[in-house]
Amino acid sequence: MKKLKNIPKFKSESEEREFWLKNESSEFIDWQKAKPITFPNLKPSTKTISLRLPESMLDDLKSLANKRDVPYQSFIKVILKERIDREISLNS
Image (cartoon, rainbow, N blue to C red):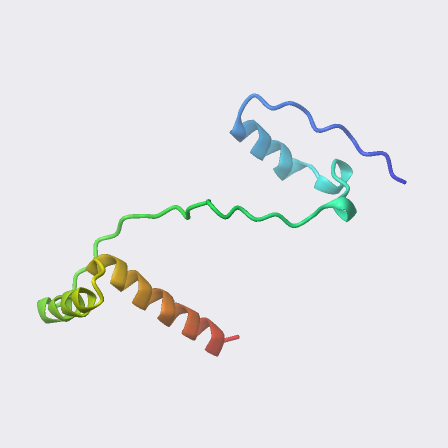
């Protein structure tokens, strides 16, 4: 069994990031013993964008969202996600 090196203590996240960029993790971690983990409460980060839409399209989106009793911006995200998933599956 290979002796693993000790992971140093880091003063900051950037110092740790730099360390892992320059070092092979298998020298410090036994990946054979690793177990999958989930983070159910982790929320994805979001980024605000500006999107110009024809007024008629925006009116249609708002009307459809209103029929489903959801905010129109959330409805737009659902539509985009569904379409992205479909495109990915078609191109896989």
